[in-house]
Image (cartoon, rainbow, N blue to C red; front, side, top):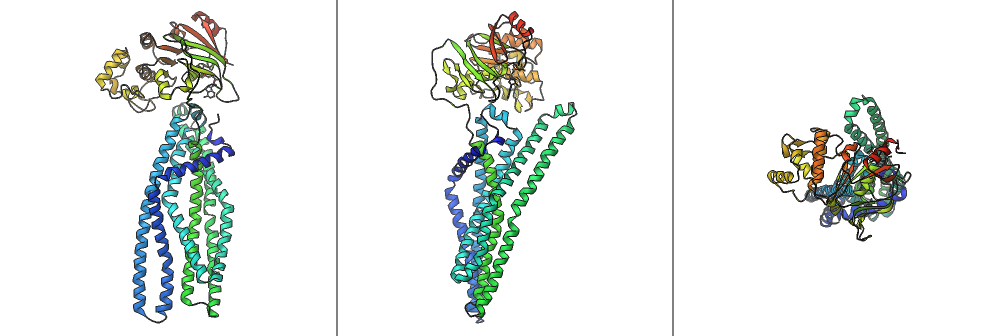
Length: 586
Ligand SMILES: Nc1ncnc2c1ncn2[C@@H]1O[C@H](COP(=O)(O)OP(=O)(O)OP(=O)(O)O)[C@@H](O)[C@H]1O
């Protein structure tokens, strides 16, 4: 399945935008009350702004021309009160919408992060972490900016424009129609230019993601970069990503500002029309000076928001481009679905591969028609040349991936019918590169362990001793409280593997997979691990992947994994022969 977010087809993109928009509306559905109050506040604000010019025109025609200064002061006080109320409504809508924006940002980031947690390993193989981080941080912020700052200005400006347009038409129809002609041209230009604005902003967001991916990759590999003195290589790669970002940012900047002068020009043309046509109407006695002053104000009230709408519209297009990138993630379906029903048959085997085929992508099959059974309480070894398919086989046992054809049965049931919790309870997997996060040895041992999560150190130490893991814990200077950093750099690779080993064993799984789990451990500690493995409950099935054949000498059965085949190798000697015969991965 294609999980590469940068290779999503136009068709997929369309569906995901639609699904995404639906989801976006769902995200703010519970804010209905706040939104209604904010819209109400902005409508009051717009109405007051619209009434202002009418009061001014009326003051000129009724009081200024007749030199009635008490009337002027009276209307000035009314205007002042109107401006105060307008200020209050403007403040409250800003506050309300700021809250809506931040809450939406909060929910959205949580939704994306939750979605990322549900996606299968294939998704992370195909996408760069830096790009994903940029989507979670940067793209969501574009939406927040639109919701907290632009949306209400958008509604406010449109309502002022509609109101001003109505006043313009009502006061003098033919003058109103002439004043609004430039707006129709602007509307047409907006419709024509919008897709281009969205596209350039999408490219810019993509390049921000690309740059973030470069930074993340070089930071992750800084030791290798320094050791091989490849700083120049990464500098060049970053330079390319940065140049790309610079170019797309320039295009986006141009696209985002193109409307400002266009709108400005048309607003000025509209004012010229009002002045020329208005003065002509005054000269033939069909219009008053007060009305012309009001009229000019309404024309400004119509065209000024339009000018602001230029900026708001590009904000909207940027937000939508960001939303497209976010919704690409939110609309992804996992290819590891939980099946409601599946094959269930009584089986003596704890795990069975039945005619399993698998490839990481469609172009290349890694496992071809594999069938084998793992029985309860037995120890199995997977041996074979590098790249032969051992980790891939183990990954399918733990359902990190699903077969492209065939079926994996766990305890006689299709493995796809187990929830992730049930599956991880039954299967423990110690990966080649153990994952540790910042905390202590205790935090890392208890990762994902519901049973002992509230145990005190003393209680946990007792559990560790009972599980024969005491000798491993003793290797850590401060025992359970030994600090661990997320990269695991405060401890050695072998120590990391020991923590991963304790973590897996304490969960008491029915099936324990060790993928090169002792590759970085000294011979004495390896002997300790071997004793611990031998003393696991008699029902525990073990699958051991190892290059060092002495690690697997006690295995009940050895499988030779090579070139997409998993073949029973019989004895250790025979496995050794197969390896020595020079069978390499092809
Ligand atoms: N994430 C991946 N995406 C694409 N191909 C992969 C991926 N992981 C492994 N492969 C390919 O699958 C094949 C089998 O790899 P696998 O890691 O299963 O071998 P292995 O026997 O465990 O090797 P090793 O002994 O080095 O750990 C290799 O050709 C490898 O290139």
